[in-house]
Length: 208
Image (cartoon, rainbow, N blue to C red; front, side):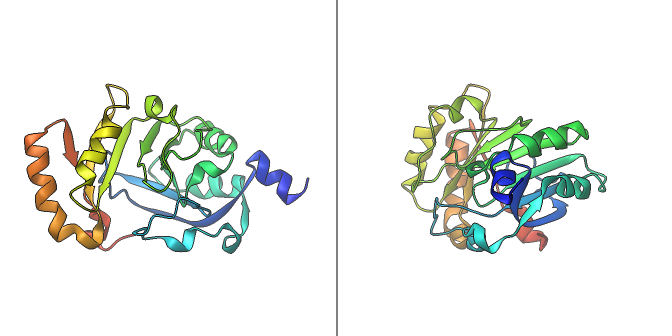
């Protein structure tokens, strides 16, 4: 089978990096997990802190079984699939192989593409450059809005109105503007307690 066919089947993926660390953002902050960062993204957020993930050609295809074999060597039985934008690819094989090894599957996505794969947790972090597909709203366990300016609060509410009733809502300051935006987010959450604050704690801790 050619590499292209293996890519389409999800048995090979352009892996940018894999690492074991503490999850830094959102609902699962503070938990150990194995991160699988997949290369390739056409969403193009101007404040993205992993722009090197955008071009999939920079990241060689890797056998998914090798990735899973790496993941199972670590104590925490949880894997975060992130990018880039991972849902560009067929993730069903990766998710099934992880779950077959009793590893929980956590996905981070902008929602720009239809969801594929069996995930225990879906974190939806929509971006203005590529609106989420409609069906992702009902599937999201967590909505994480990056707050870059004051207008983003209204934008956040438009997405909160679309997710399911059990979805956890987070506002997170964009890192380069954290000193300005964090106090505004704090005030907003106190006035609108359906929201919670997410911070990039891994950056404060100096870990991946």
